Each structure stands twice: as C-alpha cells, then as structure tokens.
Amino acid sequence: MRVVYTDHLKLRLRARRIPERMPERIYREAQERYYNHATFRHVAVMSVIYHRRRRKMMIAYDEFPDRVEIVTIHPIESRQISERVLAGRWTHE
Picture (cartoon, rainbow, N blue to C red):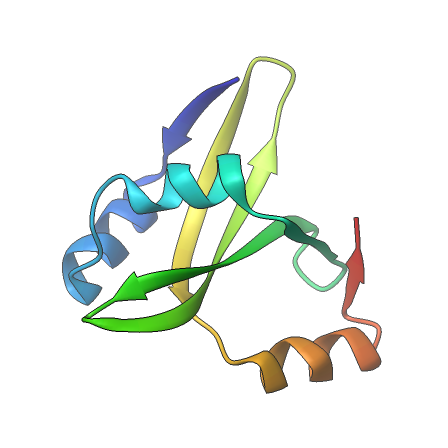
C-alpha cells in the first residue's frame, strides 16, 4: 500500500523533531490498532525510541483503496489509550 504524508504531518515531524520514516514504520509494523469514533480515523500505536527514550507513539491515518494518508503523529501515554478505550472513543480494530 502506498503511504502518503499530509502537509499537517510534515509540519508535526519538523516541529517535534520526529524522524521522517517513523510514521510509515508505525503504520506498517504496529500491533496496536484502533478506530477513533470521534475523528473517524484509524489509529496505530507502537513503542519507539523518541528523543533517546522508549515512548509509545501514535499515528492517525485514513485508508483509501489506493493509498494510506497519515494525518498526524505524537507521543501518547498508556493511560491516555486506556481512557479513550474505556470511554468508547477508540475501539480495537
């Protein structure tokens, strides 16, 4: 599947000093996947090294027949994930 980065994602990568290949790696390798019912987007979460620490990083993305568009990326805590699942905002895919 072809992976496309939105302009917003490119801005986030620069602002947060996130390696350029990290969003695609998370999309392809993440074992933790959700659907966000508030934004109607898919979410993938993976533990990565970010600023010399192991952190969970999430991406939000849209799937189309010919491509995947990654919209944003940011660190996320396990507690935040649990809260979103318990609230019903995120459901496991």
